[in-house]
Image (cartoon, rainbow, N blue to C red):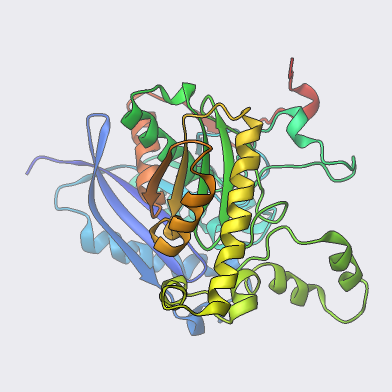
Length: 373
C-alpha cells in the first residue's frame, strides 16, 4: 500500500481531549477520523495541577493514534491547540522544548489548552516530525489606540478564540469570493466562552477579551461593574478562588438559572419559561450591543457579521439576535467550531510552503512600536 501523508491534531479541554487525523493531499486536508475523548471528573481531580495531567493525556493520545492511524500511513506533522501564552502574532508557531516548558510550568493563566503544545511535541518527537501550534488565545493584533483603556496601569490586551475565528473568516472569504486579507467583518464566537471580534484585512484588530466588556456566557460573568467587584474583593467575605469561580465557571447563565446546559434551556425558553426567557433576552441584548461596538471599530463598513460556536445552533438565541442586529449587515451562520480542522489546515499550508511559521520565543512588537498613522 502506498504511504499516505497524515497530520495529527490535538485539542485538550478541561474534561476532554479532542484528537484527529487528517490526510494531507496536495495543499488540502481530508479528515480520517476525529474523536472526543471524555475524562471523568474523578480522574481529572487526581491531579493537583494541569501540568500534572500530561502523562495521563499522552497515554490516551497514543492509544488513539495506534488505533486509528491507517496502515502504511506516514505521519508528517503534529499540531496542538495553543495555550495561555504571552502576546503573539497570528499564525503557526513551531514547538520546541522551551515552548513546551513555558506551556506547562509558566503559562500566563492555567487552562487545559496549555497541554496542546506538549502533547503535539511528544507525539512529533516519536515520529521525528515537526510540531506546531496555531493561533493561540493570546494572539494580539491590537493597534495602539485599541490598547488605551482609561488607566495607564491597566492597558487593554487581547485574549480571543483566534483559532476558530480566523479559520471561519477564511471560509467566509472563500464563499463570498474575496481575499482573506481584504475582509472586514465582525465575528461572534459563542460557545461556553464568547469572543466578539473586529476583523480588518485578516487581523483581529479588537475584541471583547472575555472579562472586559464581554457579554456573559453560559458559565462566565463577562464584563461586570468594577466597583461592586472591588468592594467584594476587599470585604473579607470571599476568598480569591471563590470570586474567580463566580466570574469564570459558575457565572453567567449558570449563576442565574443553575444550569449551563443551553440545549435544555433553549427548550424551556421555547416552552414559555419566563425566568429562562428573561436571561435569554439579556444575553441577546449584550451580544447585540457588543457586535455593534465591534462594527463601530470598522466604521460600520463591513462585509458581514459571522456567528459561530455551539450557540449558533440555538434558534431562540439566533432568532432574537437576528432581529436585533439585522440592520447592521448580512448575517452568516457557521455553527460549531472545529479547532482540529483549523489546526490541520494551517499546518498543511506551512508544509506546502503557502504560509510561514514563527519560532519560540516569539518577538512581539509592543504598543509603543506600532504606528497608527
